[in-house]
Image (tube, rainbow, N blue to C red; front, side, top):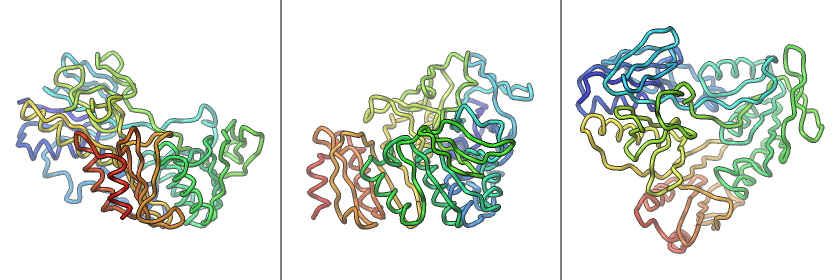
Length: 399
């Protein structure tokens, strides 16, 4: 067992790893390195309650009882800039170094940015608490809002801004929002609720640039249309925060590549959460799950692997949820464009139903609109080695 473990990343995955290490009986030294100044906080509310309900920042804390009981050293506001994997030595932004017997990479992702508009005020991404502070302050001036990107973050922010009474337009190059997560039919179903609430869409349109001097005043679309805006929120996805690992000898391909227990290509170096791609018997393409639940589940596996020297291979089924206006939507599994879809326990005209997706005779994914119990039951079925047939799932939930 190592004497000293360094955890790089002081957000959900990092904190839960520290907690799991202590539960596994690790009594040695733990150092947690975080690029942000804040102690671990919950990111999902940043696009919802923090904006709409003006939550105090204390409500965002991931550790309700504080972190003192974990007996860890927290180096916050100091990003790791390089790793000498052989020596297990980390270099931080201030030039200091941390050496450990085992290193856990939990650096998450960074927001993708557009290649223009950096010189203008009023153009923001939403990834960190500092981003959310700036966005909340900007919303207070009642600006016209354009959201670029109709993924989960973009759609949640659009709903939050509209709830605050702002004019909101969402720009998305695909023909419907949330296609990558929910498919086109359900994406359009969500769009209908947004339209009913006053959100305007420009679908099938890209962004060619921004207008303004000093501050943004408009968004220029690929078709030539100019949308007036005093606030632009860019939500065009996230990239794993692994660029600092160049030269460390760790295999990187859209995230740190790991076995099914979180071990990287370097002995004694582990990775989990949004910055990692684990081997997965259910998904041979080894997807990178940017999901709250996956990070929590993986932390238990990594801690056991470090403390015990071995852990059962972990093959999670993706699970993610989103709240938009009065809709509570959750998804389990993986949906592809050609999957067959069957709506059960309601209809698309309602706000409560279950959508089942099938591929090659097997259930591939489930989306629940206010139907949490059947979704969780089917997630467990999806996790079984043989899964469940699409026909059996449809028959069970159509009755």
